[in-house]
Image (tube, rainbow, N blue to C red):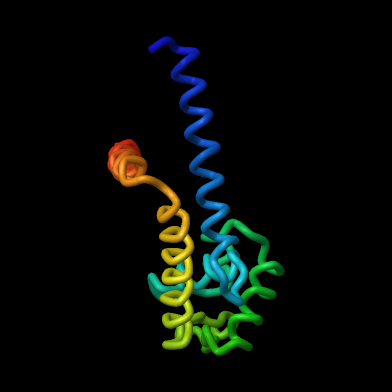
Length: 140
């Protein structure tokens, strides 16, 4: 394969992966916006301060404050005093937050299953192989 062909393949693959990611995020029916789901997913790994969460999410502190306030209002996140720094709060995922993440994952899987149902058995087998290849590429 020539260098230009490899570059073309890399470009096509990158764009296809981005499109799949975007469609899965936006096509699954849920009352949570993608940025809220992302914040909840990061909190699933453990408690964070709002500043830490903003850094992980690569957003400004004011943007994260709006997101956190909404998640707290929905009962998906709790905000408690930091044990060592009275100026900070600690954000923790609630049981309802965990349930919301499970619902989002199920909705996304359901959407993807509907898309796969429209393919032939051969096409689904090809996608299985492509998925294995993509996973190999990603662990390098």
